[in-house]
Image 1: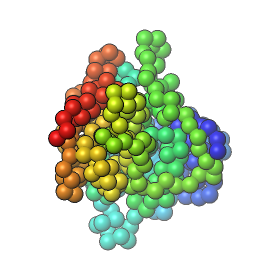
Image 2: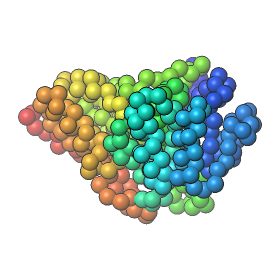
Image 3: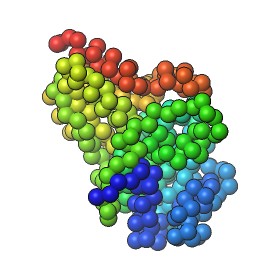
Image 4: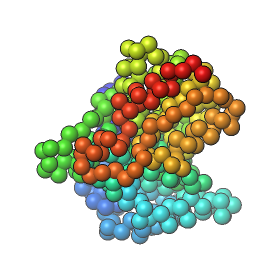
Length: 339
C-alpha cells in the first residue's frame, strides 16, 4: 500500500495499462506537455498532440477505436466536450447498437470537471447528468486516488465508450494549470482525503456500476459523486454532533447506477439527500428520486445541487455550488420530522 495524489494515481494506472497493451494511445490538446512522463516512456506515436478542434479529434478517436485501437482522448475540460457532442452522442454512443454489436468503440473521453476555483460557468460545469442521459455511454466520476486509478483501468477494459471525469479540486495540476493563473486572491477548498490517499499496486480495475458506502448511518442517506462525497462526509461529521447519524454513498459511476446499494440504504434510513454539483433540473438528483420511488420505497427526499450558471466571481461561486453548510441545513430539514 502506497500513498499517491489523485492525479498521480491516474497516471500510474495509465502507465501500467499502456505497458501491457500497445493499442492504448492518448491524444488531445497539449497532451505531450500535460502527460510528459507518459510521453517520455511511450513516445510520440502513442502520446499525440492535436489541433484545437475537439470535434475533429474526438471524431478521429471514434474511428481509431473502431479500427482496433483503445484511444484515450483528452478534451481538457468537460465544457469543451460540447464542441464534440456529435461525435460522442451520435456516433460513439450508437455504433455498437446500429451495427448489431459487430462494431465497438472502446474509447475513453477524459476531461476535468467541476468548480470551486474561480474560472466561471464556461469552464466549471460537471455535466455528468447530461452524458448519463445518453444510452451507450458509461460515465465515471472518481472521488479518491484509489478509485481514480482503478476506474481508469475499468474504463480501458470496457468495450464501449466511457466518459471519465476528474474533478479539478482533486486533480491538483488542473488548479496550477488553469485555476491560479497568477491570481493571488483565489483560494480553494480542497478535500485532503480526495486529493491524496492510499493506493494498491499493481492496479486492479474497480467494477463499473458498483457504489461504495463511505460512511454508515441510521437516520439519513446522502448520495453523491466526486467532490460532493467529501462535502457530504464533512457534513455528516457536523450532523453527528447534533445527534444525527448520516450515511454517505459514493456512486463512483453515474452510469450504470448501483440500484441495489442505493435502495438498500434509503430503505433503511427512510431519508435521502442527494448532493450533486451538476445542475438540478433533469439530472442525476431527479434520476435517483425516480429510482427509489420505482422501487416502491417511501422516503423523505431533498437535494443540494447547482441551480444556475456558475458566476466568475469567487465569492458568488461559493454561493451557487453545493457546500457543507447547505448540506447540513438540508439534512436538518429532512430529519426535523419523524414522518
